[in-house]
Image (tube, rainbow, N blue to C red):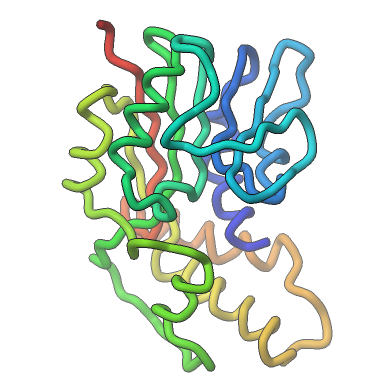
Length: 217
């Protein structure tokens, strides 16, 4: 819930409102709440393992079952860190996008250039990443640039989820793991930490948001 809330606050006003969208790596359908309700917006979801709500196709990011130049937008939220051959996935996304089509990415950042407060937990970060199916911890800024700029021009790159959000995130999992609180953390509680990050840790964080445009042929 907190991870979704973090992304909503960063990208909810950035995502397309009309056109044909490829929702790549849609998992259990949680990211449907990111898209506005609009009859002019059509979202086709694709995932290797899950069957979410809406129009869904089971498929592989390395071999998308769509013709070239079909989509206006591709939305890839917390997906690239699960794909070993991420460069091939980006090229395949580029293939199915129209010229000047837009690509939206969120993925972890591996650069910890901010104060990281770690609370004691039952499991290590490495164990959690493995359980989540991550094949890499994240990307550095240079790695993200190299991954995307071969086929796309980056229009916007920002980071989110720094010191305060990490504290809030860990406290949320304390509640889940240890049941310290008698109530579930509610939205205003989680938003407090995110707003503190925006005030005191601007430009830093454990997550990337990238908006890129397909280069003209």
